Length: 349
Ligand SMILES: NC(=O)c1ccc[n+]([C@@H]2O[C@H](COP(=O)([O-])OP(=O)(O)OC[C@H]3O[C@@H](n4cnc5c(N)ncnc54)[C@H](O)[C@@H]3O)[C@@H](O)[C@H]2O)c1
Image (cartoon, rainbow, N blue to C red; front, side, top):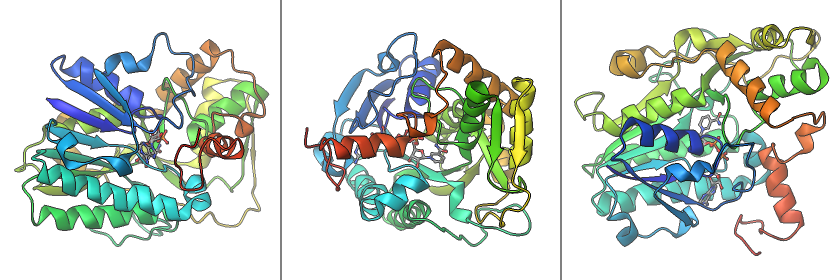
């Protein structure tokens, strides 16, 4: 299969490229990325782009229809990819994550691309009191990032009414785990880095909020399923929660697992904190019914061990890592302060 992976030079991309190449050597992979984080490598044994056959440094807003005619499938990861960046770059977040994503899918359909896989997010459920959220439950996106994902899903659903392309919106749990471009702006990764460098984890909430987590390797497994699923399995357009029912965790439990992996870690919980608005549990029954052979396999403990091993390889010791290039917002701010990119997230160089 000839597959275009947008946003492949990020956190998840290197893991996805490796997985898709290993699962089927005849997969021909083309990467397309604006390269904002290309330099943020975290001690890979060799370049993660060795798994990619062709690499473009390109803005997803510039892609045209003739370029897309060569591909059977698109895995669309490129995005302003978390709440802090979405809050800082609100208008551009809508432009890239929503408008450019729907346009990309429209051009792909017109170009004859058969399969489109979109990286959506469970954060679209927002604050969700009560039981675990199902795909049919109301959405409550609280941030510019989450709103951009909802708007894209809506655009893709309506495109599906007029095209033959099989479209899957994968509503991913919060990512965790080791990558050749590790990020420390994710809850588990932050806790491991904090325990590793300072021997402490400071939980800002009272520890009760729920988060569904998924290891990056299991995200790759789900993407491979979406690339190969038939329309009969889930329909021509499908939005599905990606994770596992027993991988919904409370933040205090995430901290405890990290302390198990790094014995001696001190955990401090803010018992007087206001309720955290980003608490939600998610129901993954639909995914387990549709994709029994592609279920998440990496548990929290294993993910934490692999991050610890990665940090060891990196000789990691930075207690100020929240100011470092392992935090995506800091990378964009630095590029902007040095006038490398403008407020529209375009390169000036
Ligand atoms: N990390 C998570 O917890 C999580 C959870 C759910 C969904 N997702 C989604 O998965 C996708 C990948 O996430 P990630 O964690 O690897 O993010 P990331 O920020 O590490 O990578 C995104 C990549 O997209 C590229 N990009 C951004 N704007 C671009 C543009 N205009 N043109 C071309 N490339 C552009 C960036 O350079 C970056 O390499 C995103 O769509 C994200 O929203 C992530």
